[in-house]
Length: 459
Image 1 (cartoon, rainbow, N blue to C red):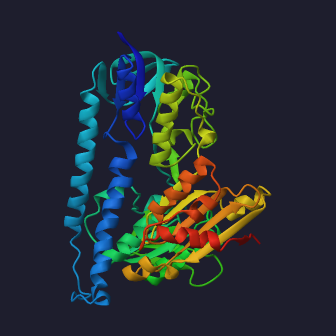
Image 2: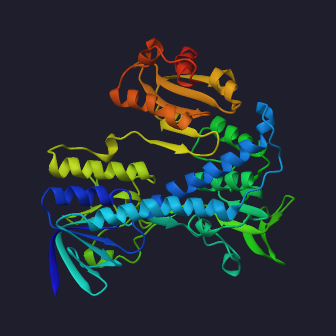
Image 3: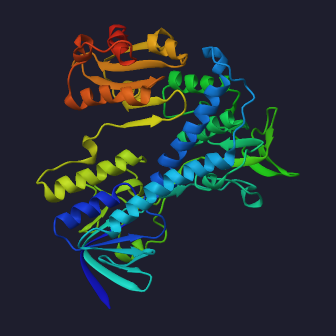
């Protein structure tokens, strides 16, 4: 027997719950399907748990620095990893339970616990139930990519998901991949007390960032005692007694590093391989992401793909923006598009990186005449007062329009301050708005006009 709905939402990651809520408020009988934990990656293995762990690591780090601030503390602090995990689990559980309760309590909605697979374009099977709807929204997210690496099948390894169960201190954590996920774990576990080595195949730690940003992040991590191994072109793993050996370079010494635990942080892959997309005729690209147009429609009419599964953004905020685009287009008479949004994200090491818009490399590739202004965080009074002077601020503007093209704010408050510039970019306002604005003292933001005042032609 088939149960007919007006809409089916598959997955309760960031964009799924608000979409389900809006669908029911529009009077649509809606089925919500979740195979595991409500909340998706962000709630269970991503943003919320990792930032909770980052907070614990920051406290440990500052406790060791207490004497710098005239506070008697001492460097022999003890980190209880079981209590660190318990705090993280409690915060995750609260969020997960809240979302599950929200979905189950929605009027005109039915919550299914199970795995959804397409049988035809507008019909899915969940356990033994057949569900049918004219509108189906795929929001199944992604998971850690496990590469085809020599020797990997012979050892135990961790991913961002399995790291959530760790309640002990690894003696020596090796992180493969200079990804944002990997670097956050690298710094937090170094601050908890582990020896940490980051292994990256590229010549720079973070290939997508400009060299000055990547190099500054590398120096921040090295200053905390994290070993960075770049140009690791011959990566393979093997057992070394009770430890794990990672072979790095086929020619130059030292050719390998030996540690107690291995974390893979080399990218993400979409959860699309067991959805029955072939039976529905839904197209995917060569990496498995569902192909969507600028309004998130798949090639099958009446089927949309939102969140990480569509390859149009790899962040919680892009997933939520997918929901906003869909809701506006379906119900509010608007015509919003994915291409309208400005790229923005954060790297939540300490100090954090806030990024918006284009990099210098992208500006050059686009052939745009531009100006760039920078300021070291050591010149910012608030940073000196806090004893957190690492990093710098950089703003790129178009020479002709005076509009902000991009920004990299690596330093105290950079992940929050970047929104000031992002809002100005969406407004298409000239940088002179910031230059002439009066800001509060003493803050980090009051130095944005100073950065603007340092503008020079981009070399």
